[in-house]
Length: 510
Image (cartoon, rainbow, N blue to C red):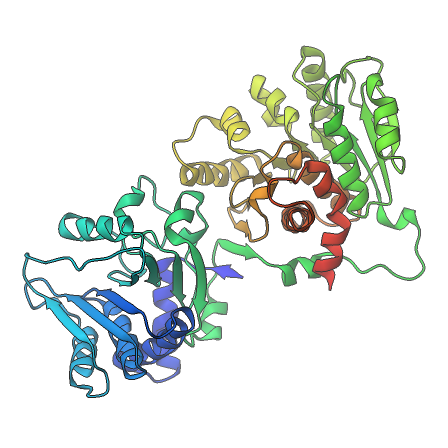
């Protein structure tokens, strides 16, 4: 699914009205109709609902939806903020008139025109509809509005926001203070989700979000090129090749993973097992000699190559022609390992061979930053926030980190998988694919090693690195969800996720 900036959504709206021959008011009334249906699915009749509507289009949509809900028997008190008495847009003014004059829409309607306002009593039993500001609002709430928002947030009421939580800009913006933004339990996005929904720091203010279909033109959406995409199951399914009846392991490639060291052979096991489960025809683990019996016992279907060292990797050399190479889980940052990685990167760069680099491979590069210049084009780097900051400098916020990732992906011509609450796959053309699968159960040690194995295994099967990264993060998230269903959110371990990779792929391909 494409994700659009606020300016692009405005263009889609204008194109829709032109294509469907709708006036501004026609569009607002139709949107209010769709919104009322969505709200009535969210709220059962019989509960007192407090509504806060602004003077803009969001207020207009909200007023029209409330008119229809009141006519259907909902009990509402509606506060329309029109400070000074002359700020309503023409559409909002028309919707106010329709609400007041509709004899079937009985409600308590209060228009706030002065600076003095008595806040209604709210409690945990209250339901609040927040229609103060929509996605077109680009500033920050101040003064009296800020005070109202804080009272709403502190009331414990169930809060449903229209389009976006009031005070949250639609596009990524740094430096926001969440207590000055409505903290919605549910956000009903009008037409399309907003990019801001997928910034980690906004998760607690957006809550659970749903899209209300308001009839946007599909042609208009296709005509706009956007940099952000939401990774969904149907798209990932198309990236995974169907297997012919007559095939052998040679048809699905070979992968080698350089992983593990003394005390960290678990990382090697997790990455290797995930590569096997992802469908690679043949997987080899290269590790310190101490890992031989451990890896062979845990992943008997994989081959094992041992380093000359008992405790660490001191040589990274390809003795066969592998289709995919992953490096990093648990290799440590000893000088011998760093030197081996640097030598290998120079060779891989000269051969233009993309790699998958994770965990300690990234930490080794952070200790010797000139190695970044040797990372082959279209290699996949999979840092979490701390690893990213070690590589590219400390970032003040997740949004700043994403912006830096876009800059670095373009500069080094690599794919950066920025792991987090929402995992971002950042491409060299600055396009960002945002993962929609996953669970808090994945927040446990070793799940990043599993992701490395999945992506490496997919590349081995002939999937291009940028597509393997997109498919890999989605499969990883679904595997986490399957593991959670089996073991509960608290009980998931990384090996549960690795064991669920095959089931995740099966589920996606259905």
